[in-house]
Length: 361
Image (tube, rainbow, N blue to C red; front, side):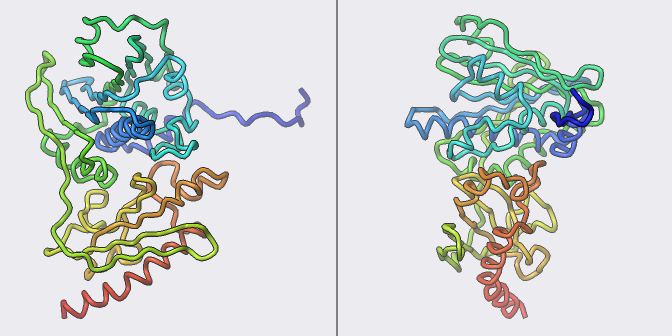
C-alpha cells in the first residue's frame, strides 16, 4: 500500500486502559454501578419480551490483603459463547440492545470492560440453555487482553451449585481488584453509596428488582447480607407538566417536589445527593442535575425528574458522542438540543426557586 493511501486509524493498547481509568477512577462503587446496570439491562430485555424473571441481583465482596473479589450475579438472560464474545471481547460496540430501541443503559459497550480494567482483571461466567461459558479480561505487558470462552460445558448440578445458579440462565461478573492503588470501602460505606447513587435509584425503587449486598468470609461463607433500597425524600409535588421541545418530537415531563427538610445537594455530595432532578430516558437514569441552580442555596429542598425518552433517539444517531460523555460523566448540556431542554426546564424552575428564596427570607 502506498504511503499516502488511506488506512484504518490504529489505537495504542493503552487507549482502552486510559479510558477505563477515566471512567472508573479507581472507584469500586463506579465499577459496581456498571455491572449492576448491566444485569438490570438483561432483566429489562426479558421484560420487553414478556418473559418471567426473578429480578434478583447479588453483589458479593470478599476482602483479602491482596486481590479482593467483587462479584455481581444475576438470573436473567445468560450469555452464549458468541454473545459473550460480543459483550466482553469487543470494546466500544453497542451490545446491550440500546440501538434496537430497548429500555437499556448501555450504548458504548465499554462499561463492563472499564470496570474490569479500571480495578484489575476478572472473569465473566454464564449459564445459557444448560451450557456453561467462561471468558476472561486481563492485562498482559500493559496491553488489554481477552480470553474467549472455550467449548461449552454442560451445566451439571454440581456446576450450578458451585456458581449458585440452581436453575435457568444467569451471568456472573467477577472482578479481582489486583491494582494496589484501589481503596476498598468498608461494607457500611459500600451499602450507603450504592443505595444513594443516583444511577441505581430507579432499580432500587423498582418492585420487580431485588438487589442484595453480601460480605463473604475467607471461606466464601456469607458473613453479612443486606437488601439495598432507596426511599425518596418526604415532600409534596409543586410542579407537574408535560411539554414538547419546539421543532422536535421530544416530549418532556417535568415533575418537581419540595422536601419537608433540606436535602443533601449535588454541590455537596455529587452523585449521592438526595436533592436535584434525575434525567430519565426510557426508564434509564442519564444524569442528576439542578442545572443552573446546582449551587443555589434556595434549591436545597427541590427534587424530582426530567423524563424525556427522545434522548434515546438522539443517542442512536451518529452525533451520539456530544450528547453523552464517553466516560459516563453525564449529559452534555452544551449540545443544541440539551441546551434548549435545559433552558425550558430552568424557566419552569425559576419561579419555584424564587418562591423558596422569599419563603426563606
